[in-house]
Amino acid sequence: MAMTPAERSALVDVAAGRRPGTLLLRNARLLNLLSGEIYPTEILLHGRWIAAVGEGYQAEATLDLGGRFVAPGLIDGHLHLESAMVAPAEYARAVVPRGVTSVVADPHEIANVLGLAGIEYMLEATEGLPLDVFLTASSCVPATTLETAGASLGLAEIEHLLLHSRIVGVAELMNFPGIVAGAPTELAKIDLAERYSKVADGHAPLLSGTGLNAYFAAGVGSDHEVSSVHEGQEKLRRGAHLMIREGSAARNLDALLPLLNAQTADRISFVTDDREPPDLIADGGVDHLVRRALAAGVSPLLALRAGSLSTARYFGLGRRGAIAPGWLADLVVLEDLTGFRAAMVFKSGELVAQDGRLLQELPTADDSSVRGTVKLPALPPDAFAIPYEGGLVRAIGLVPGELLTRALAVEPAVQGGRIVANAARDLVKMAVIERHGKGGGIGLGLLQGLGLQRGALASTVGHDSHNLILVGADDADMRLAAETVASMEGGFAVVAGGEVLAKLPLPLAGLMSDRPLSEVAAGLKHLEAAARELGVTIASPFMALSFLALPVIPRLKLTDKGLVLLDGERMELVSL
Image (cartoon, rainbow, N blue to C red; front, side, top):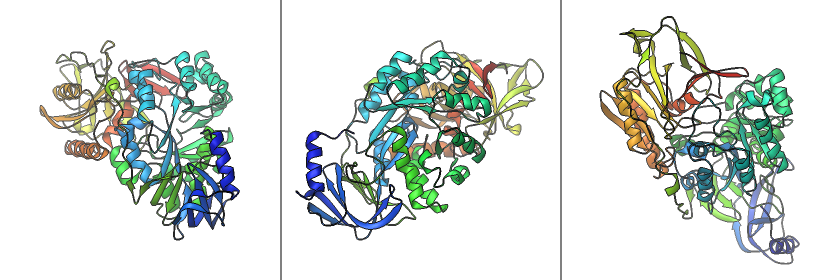
């Protein structure tokens, strides 16, 4: 954030004591991430900047903090706003009162539906919020050639985005097999990031050895797809900025916290990636990771570095992530250091939240450009029929709490020469239907581990191309579930016995609601309760469902083009 000449001149005068500041915070205990100390002091603000830290200053207004702790505003280093299932303003309403003042978002969910128009909507919808929303230029639209997205972004579009002041890098480069193989187009995306002095974010689950060397040699800077200490240590040794993730589907914090220490703190950030509405309401955003780290015994200064300063430095977000003269006045006032509960939140020097409540009205963005995106083909009664050709067949095996899946070989149940669901063995049908009006292809497969005994679930949230995902024990219920979400212009549905048991409209790109977060969270809980009535046993089933079509995560996934096997550096379509 650039400081104007007038602001600079005034700030120098205030810091030198020649004129009063705007606000003086007295009786504060500062968490100084730059010196590694916690000590009592006063903090002088002038406009949106911190003018001075120390005593003996005057201000137009004074606020006595009564010995409370003051920390820098938190920065989430990697997330997808679309996963909150609400418009960006509603996301800000949820996290700002908890002390989150900046986020770095990859808009590739909406970009895979609408391309540049989707990213432009996200830029417009995040203007004027008490939350600085930086974006990265989505690099994988589509993520692979093994699925059908609603749009595509090439090198020209990525370069166009990098010219924007709030675009801070090239988003996660998910086609790591392509980079390792030296694919010119993939390497050119990294060239663009370096040309504009911005970062190139990574995505390389389980990549190791020579492949990992090649990936980081290409110029990739980070990775958030890490699930074990061994994997994280190898990536840190190769120079990666490690992003420790705790989302709704992928929960890696506990496993990776041992990697955070004084030597690694500058190269570790906390991120949420994908968080659903109930988790946002109950636990918040990246503040949840800081709180969990503190409960696990991590020192407050280390936990806060991972939640603010390290992220700011990685992305080049100058004047953020710490409290010092000339830095942006993004501050969190805390009652104590154990619960990390924000008593007050200052954004650019203004008190914007207090005691968990936002103090200002939020702007409303025009969302007309992101509606009407679900264009399903006509579905005949036998749309989900799977002919049986003998022998064992492939099935996707869910892994609870992970985005990774297993590639199983199972003996299917067969009736009339066709494969059918087998509830006794926890095997259900799965379908992915192209929903962007580009041919209506349908990929079919089997899924084990969901627990579904009857009925069907449907979702237009299907990373990354966001085609319509169905799982079901009955073909007719699968068809009804698909038609239900199509009639809502996107969303979720639970169906059984020819009856719609629960549904949640997501009309903004088929990904987000236009309703308040509390309503969406309540709707999602109702859906999950209905799914449990049908036998579903896993937590956050719709979040888990959304990743079953993501072929850049090992090992077996399903797209509208069929089953995709990712084995090491090899990604290919395979038969059932």
